[in-house]
Length: 435
Length: 115
Image 1 (cartoon, chains in turn yellow, red):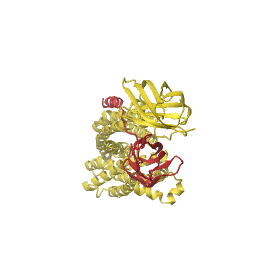
Image 2 (cartoon, rainbow over the protein chains, first blue to last red):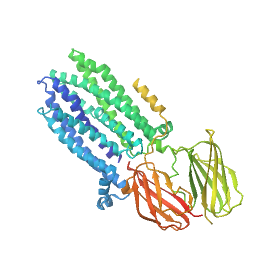
Image 3 (cartoon, each protein chain N blue to C red):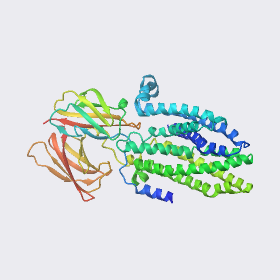
């Protein structure tokens, strides 16, 4: 699954990146150049070619991703899922399936929108360029609904996907454009007019790069807040640590890009000495190659991240939603100050142990200084038992050797003095079965 | 400079991020509660929007027999299941939720009908 995701991300970003590179870097540079330059005639078919290859790879990997996801969603084995109509249900009745249908259409549109740019004739049309840019952006941006940005409720449902869409488009515009940039450098060495075009293009790419990096930073911060919004989530979970690695690689790429922009690009653009400018161009090519490799690693990390539970989730314990242990009595109590879960094992008359969990509204464990458990038997007038709980494993409290003499509706009350100084007192009925 | 600000702001971000995976937020009847009158339906609220095509729930009595009836009504992050008339006793709800983000979660809880 991870390989399929990585290939699909890379192919999508490449195809969209070529398109955006064409519209915002290559064509403006071609227009400003002279007609004797051989570069445009060499580069255009190359760019369209790799974009189409990218789209083909995206289609194949996308189909594989869809099939694997449909199998996971339905819980059925692959062959059954494909033959019994479940696959169609996934395609037509789930958000992921619908997103994939839309992206397939966009992929076809993108392939068509690229075609006029193979040769010079129609490439000056602003309409064709606008269509190409929009379709490419949509093709990259709609990947947002294949990941963790989908499914939020309330404000998160608006902001998180919006940030993720922009994040993907900016990634396509920058990382996806590195390969076209390298192709352009390779084609530019032939003659002076071509070199002149490459100079102009490098300037345009710089601007595109700055806008993209800024967008990636801002939207990356928003995404990080939603998916790993705390220090424990960032350093204490696999997801968080991988995310930190991604951010570190991104920062290295930005540093190289800054070097390119501040040192090398001026030398290429301003130097009248051809030798010095050519040397700067060679260095730029090496840097862009390094950036491309780092970008590939980032994409691989993203492919893994999507298969892990986000740090903000994995950092918590979720016994609340897991199945209750067999034979246990269990109660979950909600209040404005927090939630308490009491599990009594075994949940029948005899000697039992109580495990107590204290959570805040975000399912983070509440720290307490002292916890007391009071159990009141069903029969009215029977004496209650109050015991002091001791800290146990997994941020829980426990009380051992509780004597449960009668079956029926007991009342369990928990009195917790929290580390914050507040007191959390909650009670609820709990059913104890007969032996 | 921009990079430094970005790192610092990332580190300063408060907690409270969204959970990706639909977990049970609350239910009616309340989890673990005892209700005097038999409810006509069980409602479940989740932390994420669900895919109706792949989310479901069952309600069983103490002997394991199904007491839910009809199809679960699912919309947004809510699931409702109709119930047959319930006698006093202990009931268990088992739910399976597919979040819109393609991840499946499941869980269960009990409630009691009685005096």
